[in-house]
Figure 1 (cartoon, rainbow, N blue to C red):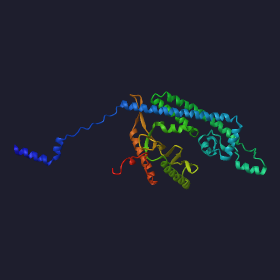
Figure 2: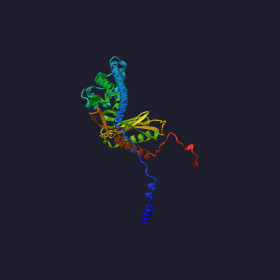
Figure 3: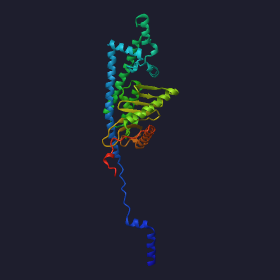
Length: 373
C-alpha cells in the first residue's frame, strides 16, 4: 500500500502542472450576457429617430431652396435687368456662371435625358466675341437673327415646371418623415418618392445629395476617427485628384470627365471611376462601383481623444420585415461596417505612407514625463 502511495506521489512530482491545478484552481470566466432583442430593437428605433430628425431638416432646407428658385423665375418674367444679365452670361460664358438650366455645357446631357427640354439647336444664340467683331465693323452689337432671350425664357419655363413638381414631392416626403411609424409600407413609399425626385437629379437642391447618402434604400452612416490632420488629407487627396485628372485627359478613355479648379487647387474631379470634391470644411471621395464606396473627411477637434478628423462612410444594409414585431430588421450591419472601415483605413494609410505623412496627435504627454522614466 505504501509503495503505491509513493509511486503516486512521484508521478505527481514529475508532473508539476497537476499540483498547480490542484493548489490554484482555474478562475471561472464570466461570459458576457447577450444583448436582448428588445434592447437591439430599442437601439434601432433611437438611431432611426436621430436619422429622421436629420432628414427633416434636410427636406425643409430643400423646400426653401426650391421655392427661392421658383420665385426667381417668376421675378425673371418682370425684370428686364435680370434678362440682360442672363443673356450676357449665356452669350459670353455659355451660361456657366448663373443657372443649371441655362448652362450650354450641360445641353447635350439635358436634351438626351429629358426629351421635353428645349433644345439648343432650335435657337440662334449670339456670341459675345461675335458681337465685339460686329461692333467694330458696323458700330452696333444688335443682331435681329439671334433669339438668345427666347432660349432663356423657354428653359426657365421648363425648369419652373420641374421645380414645382419637386416641391410637391418633397412636401410629401416631409409628411412621411413626420408621421414615420417604422412600418415597411412607409419605407417603400419614401423610396418611391425619392426615385421620382431623382428623375431630375441635375435640378436637385444641394441638400438632396446628403439625403441620398444617408439612409436611402437602407444605407446607414458610420464614422471613424483619425489622428491625421485635415490639411494632410487635403494634400494627399488633392495629389490623387491630380493623378486622376491627368490620366483622364491623357488617355481619353473616360465616358464623362469633369474638372473644376479654383486658384491653385481642385474643387471637383469626376470621371467614370472616381469622384473627389473639396469644400471649405470637408472632403468627399468615392469610387464608382456597383455598391457605393466612399468616405467624407471633416476636421473634428475631439475633447475625449487624441484624434483630429472624423471620417464618415456608408454601407448598404439588407433587411427583412419581421411580421411578429412589425419592424424592418437590418441584417449583417456590424460585419459590413467592420469590413468597409478596414478597407477605408487601409486605403488612407497607403495614401499617407506614399506621401510620407505621419499622424499628428492633438496633444502628447512627452513633455510631462521625465527622460529618466
